Image (cartoon, rainbow, N blue to C red; front, side, top):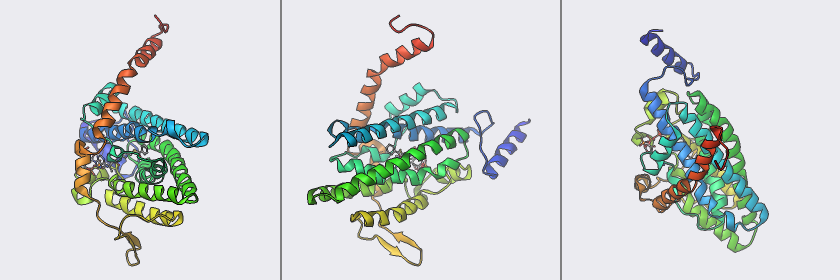
Amino acid sequence: MTDSAVEAHFDEVIARHDRIEPRDWMPDAYRRTLVRQIAQHAHSEIIGMQPEGNWISRAPSLRRKAILLAKVQDEAGHGLYLYSAAETLGVSRDELVDNLLTGKQKYSSIFNYPTLSYADVGTIGWLVDGAAICNQVPLCRTSYGPYGRAMIRICKEESFHQRQGYELLMTMMRGTPEQQEMVQESVNRFWWPSLMMFGPPDENSPNSERSMAWGIKRNSNDDLRQKFVDMTVPQADALGICLPDPSLAWNASREHYDFGEPDWDELAAVIRGDGPCNAQRIEHRRRAHEDGAWVREAATAFAAGGEIGD
Ligand code: BYC
């Protein structure tokens, strides 16, 4: 096929909302955008293991510990599917890890906040995984095949994660006044950062227009944020929790909830690296990567046909 024919083929696949596959021709900018987004997504899953991992050794019961261990392991798995999807675009795993550790690539702002009580495990499941589901279900229909297929599996697990968080919070809300207070305090801290997970407002989102035209993103940041608020308010009512936003109110003419403006300066600061836990998260990841060097060496030697201990 000529250059113009492959380009026309790409445009036609995008126009009929079909999939681009790794061996298909694609514009360089499309490839770069995918690597940026999928890598950021993979890094988020891996860094996202830390805030909850903080509570594994202090879970209040064996049942809660088993649930939390399984959830954090799922997140490692999500990171691995996503790194594999990014690798189909011609980047290596080493390069991606290096980009995370040197700050060249980002990860979600939400994981730069501390987890101060066990209620945070429930709140992360309910709000953070809830936001992740709103953002990621449409990504199952993203235009790049390996990314969309990874998302299908990830979303199934995320739904389970959200339910476990909700179930934990519901249990605490049926408990003592102190437990109820822990839940409310946790939700107060995580509500606004959860809204920020969807990214800057549409008018300040430099990548959205191009990514939506290419079918990489299927919805805008603000549309997904609204969907999340609409989904979450009735759940908060059922829990008996007060969401910390005095502007939150049903708008009958829009048939959506109105809500307040997140602090966009705070989001910009956290993305810049100035959030409460940015330095700690990257330092922890760097140490874990160095400590795991022997595992990578052993796996490489084993794959090459050597014996462990050679
Ligand atoms: N945090 O033009 P925009 C999970 C950056 S994991 C940090 O709107 P885009 C989970 C953005 O990258 C959740 N950075 O960008 C795991 C861009 O910078 P660059 C992760 C952010 O890409 C474990 C700039 O700001 N989910 O759920 O069109 C346990 C301008 O933004 C953030 C994903 O990664 C942020 N919040 O839209 C529990 C989903 N927001 O790269 C749960 C896939 C924006 O130009 N990603 N930035 O230097 C996406 O859907 C999109 O990339 C975003 C941003 C909606 C996040």
